Image 1 (tube, rainbow, N blue to C red):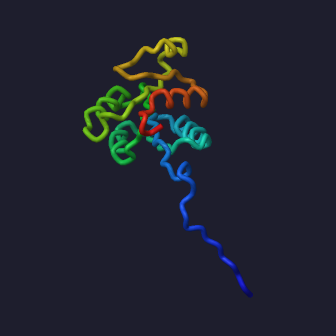
Image 2: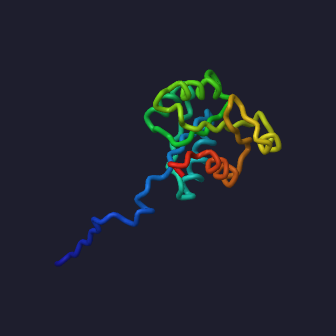
Image 3: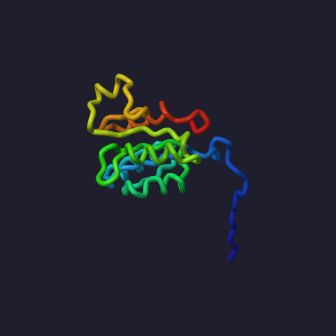
Length: 144
């Protein structure tokens, strides 16, 4: 019995081999991070990591080296402002954009371009199209 095995060892087109922007979602709600991760990955445009323990968020960011962090503000024990401050004080991460996710403001307030602790924010609940638009607005040029 003859079997033929084909293998393609050549790289695909440059667009396919280009690394996708890395997004880190930090939120104590596992349901939110998991559904956002799946939705963002389905777009085909992002590699997404989740962290549900705010105390581990900085360590996860150091490991992942994200191009952008989506960060919930209201979390138990360590709030988003503290996590953002740790990321900003890290020389390896200080240029990483942080976008807050919060249910503490309305969508109308989010559209005015206000910032929280110097960071843009997106209002929850949020649709995938709003989330993608917020990511694209805040991704650094080299990652887009």
